[in-house]
Image 1: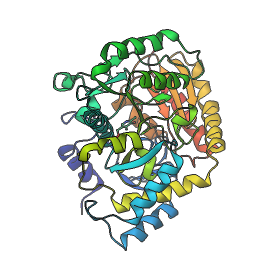
Image 2: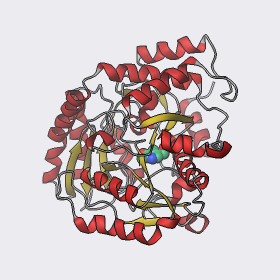
Image 3: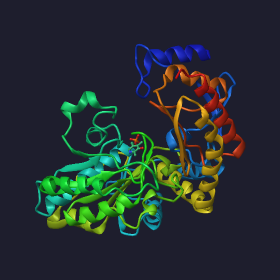
Length: 428
Ligand SMILES: *Cc1c(COP(=O)(O)O)cnc(C)c1O
């Protein structure tokens, strides 16, 4: 039997972790088990999880309802190909998704991960215009500071400078970037911003297939909140210039911003919408690209078929996890639950505003952000959080919380105190 240290040494030697050096890896912590909002390490330490494992584990770990749903499906079949076969877990899930997402979205394409669902969305848009006799519409407009995933087309619509992909710039499709939406959920709408988009559309619409954006919150690109009214106006501009509107709800979907979808802060519908991350309650990898009849049926004009088909499309175990997660979610009063979480985080993080290292504290729904004046060193800061019994993984200047929805006020307070302490030890 290997010791824990041997496992960790092997990990260092063999394994890549996300965005991590192979020669000077940052520390990694060996997990033994996880239950509720707590992750236990192999050395016995227990951490309160402020990250929901990259925003996905919304009901907490090891949830009996989730476990039972997957076990039940496992006794039937773990997987079958989706070409030629179909199954109840996928059909149930499609029906549920269509019922809860914006009204015009009527068709569902399942894929394995958020990035792939973005690839699918972009391909849908291009293929739609192709069958509609506008084959030059192949490019996308997107705001800077966005994040849409790590695969090639997804990378091409991520922030071109601060995105994690600038080494690849030469190998990526050159998309068309506009400024990020001005920040502030309730900040007055700036006409100049909409003018910039209008000008861009007017000059380029013959080659623009779609406009892709994370609605209301730009997440991994900076945890920036913006006024949903911009989206209402962008919808009108898209209609005017024959451009499909694509919402990436992979981070914001399933309640994170205090409404079931960030789109619900607006009064419009996108043409295409991507969901992932919390879709399966963080149990399995699954994503979906939803679209309206216009796009779905348009692609099939003149005998066209949509050219994408992942091996593990509609995986039954993942669909059954998603069905269970959506059932659990339907038992919550989202507005009430997430508003409470927001209040708790606001209370727990506001003391950080007094620290000279801190630029701003902002919360929206289940997202609590402490923006620092200076970027942190992750390798140094991560072990400090672990010492304090919490799991918080900052990036750049941002220390943030996206806790499971089932977290208690006491656990949020512990997270807030740990963040305060760790920041106060940072140099200014
Ligand atoms: C995480 C994320 C993605 C990529 O999803 P993966 O499952 O990591 O491929 C895309 N868009 C947004 C907004 C995300 O937060």
